[in-house]
Length: 153
Image 1 (cartoon, rainbow, N blue to C red):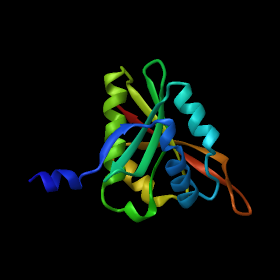
Image 2: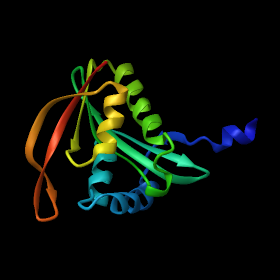
Image 3: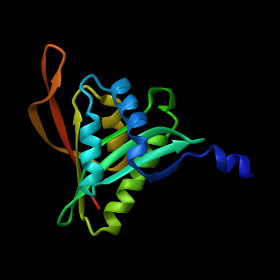
């Protein structure tokens, strides 16, 4: 039974020692990645920065801010080799739990219009699209719209 528990990823707070692994995943999965400085600044600012770890290896991460009754998920990603195992949902649900504990009544996020897999995950959890930000994200050959999504907590 403990072998099965060891197979589950664990969520923990991101620390500066994680930044090389986090940035490597970020560069692997995004064409326009956050920089090490973006993540470092988020940790230093006290944002909710989490990693998903499997067997001592960082396989995912996310960053969320919480203001007055609102949580904003700024980024969430799972390394390509660990995707499609339900771990993105596990990490997302962890952020939702934290947001509720901190008194947020709503969670917001932006997702690239072309990121259909992520949008489906968010919809399955209960997020709904409330707006579109034109030309929000840089893209190859121009810009791409963001879908603004909201989850009532």
